[in-house]
Image 1 (cartoon, rainbow, N blue to C red):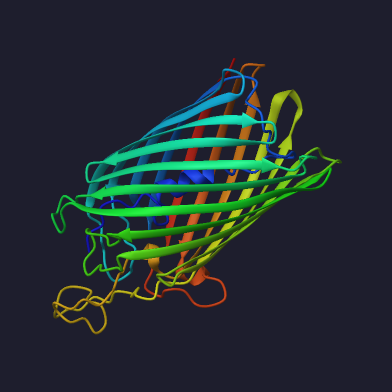
Image 2 (cartoon, rainbow, N blue to C red; image 1 turned 45 degrees about the vertical axis):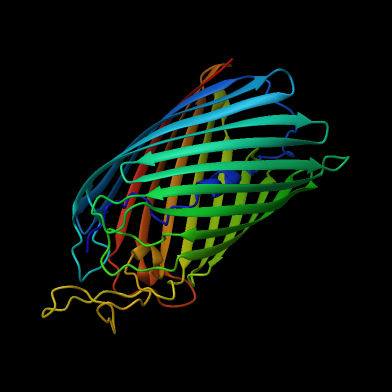
Length: 384
């Protein structure tokens, strides 16, 4: 079983869907400001990510990025991000029966830009994104908007996006394949009290095209995928400490048969002299896709064939661990410091563990090998 790119801990979302998600960031304590930023800001970040299993080092990722947000001509703003991911190492051994430790090296370059027009009671944003690897190119467009009530206590958000992906794997299993995805989103943000704000967002993705992984044996997936996501967030300000708790719940379902739950919690605590700390915890659990199988090595055949496999058949099957049943826990800690009015720095550390036995409500996939990951991100921001 050959794995080309395993730096991501879940399946890559459509690029258009990522643009819509970026348009719905829940603020700390106030309704989303329907006015351009007062100052421009430039942020430079560097992410270092590593995976490990059973004492073995696996995937290594180095990802520098730069982001710009600036007001333009009074009622407009412009934002953009450039990212470069350098991936190297050995692909993880996802299953205890199969080593799957092929060597790999890859580079991804991605960029996005968005223009926002601010109105008396709302905003309209047009966004575009582009991502390229040696065997994968993705292009995306999005249109999002917000409309607020007269008292600004309720804000409705809506959006539509789409992505077009070109897929040309280096092993020539397929050539000139593609995938197209359309995304729609509807959300509402509500001020509940002077200390509480909540947000509810519903997203629907419809994709058709090539969803199989050409670098995995016996990976044959449907050429259509529908995805639904319900996201609920609640922020509460604590007068006594001056901090803010941020809670979230995400429910995901798709036509592959996956059902997933994500619970997240973080606490933002300002300190003296411009310091701010943010501990966080996240739990994720998913049911396996209907066509997922746990591979079992066959000494006679030499390959982990799917149960009931027929040569030349068209039956859907996949041993991709991202489609398996598992649970995962992420612990994080972020510290930020305002150096002065114009400069600030931040450091974020996260530790991730994934196991089949950690799936909620039912048992997970028994053939999964435990996997661990850690990430460190350092950022520097300049405002003017």
